[in-house]
Length: 291
Image (spheres, one colour):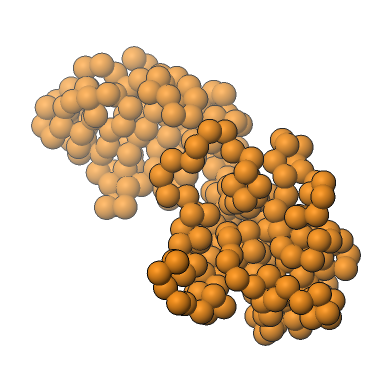
């Protein structure tokens, strides 16, 4: 059951990604909660949730600060918690619709990174523009006389959208995993896995199907594709290549070599090929297995 939260408080003035994302995440659960930005201890004491200020970490009492001496703990990998990570431990599962796999993925890919940067737990200099730097740029510059609270609200709106996309991506990965596992279980030949629609498959196949050599799936344009399974993520080496005589051929040349009248192309790297029909693409798999 979700707590009844009426007031969320964090510090005023300059802000960072951890307090911005913590507020954005809580707004998903408590959209009508009032936000107060202050360092007044009397005001903070009356708030239901206090983030990144106050010098106290007590999840049961809704206090999520990490600036006190000794911090507020760290993950098993040594990365200290910022206010975002502390809040996510308590509310992340609810924010992700009580799906632990999605909550864990968002924690790994978003929350942990923000915690690490906020706590200075990074190896070497940060190159490029990070998400944390992007949030910081919502603060007024020294030449501007901006309203910090208004800028904070702008940053929260931005962060809320980013968080929603991280959750959507994590949910997509979880759903894809289930679809691919079902396809693996239903395969007539464990070496050839057929997907009824294109679904991200590499991680799941590599982790669960050591026998898989080829993936069959429909292209967005309606034709069909056969793709090789790599030996590992990011590798250009495959468990089994498509036949060398097909490499770089297309149209009639490929049709003559394969005997398939609707064969379309085969990449020169022999890792993907296609036909107009499902039946011909399956025949490509048979020919590749025989080669």
